[in-house]
Length: 168
Image (tube, rainbow, N blue to C red):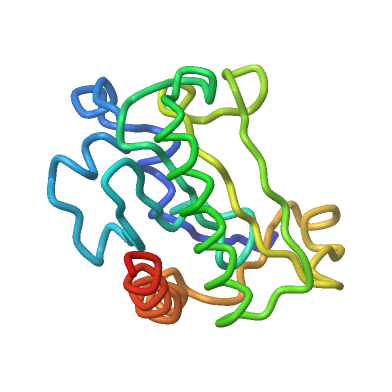
């Protein structure tokens, strides 16, 4: 039998009970996120971060800074900022890693697949023709073709540039 070792996922499937009480997204901002946290962009009301457990290469989460569970809990200013940042992230992904399409999604509640149901987040998942293959079906394994660090190094400067343009 073949084994695929992924020890970094231990923290995801067996989180430290002391740390699991705090929202991972709120903690990220409180701890003055650094590049190792894969924080891509911040605005006054929102932020974008690489998903540490991506469905596909370049999977980004866009979140309001405020801890809310639903888009209906956002102020109008937060909604606009959230969608504006999502558009900038999608544009940076298009420019730097050239996907053929995107899945954009919000999972509201645990039953809908939200891994962290208390803090609203929009998934931006780049897709390529041919990125679905036999590996998940036959092997139960999803192949991610690029490291988080590599994707971060591609997207971060592009988002910084886009952020400067949007402030003009």
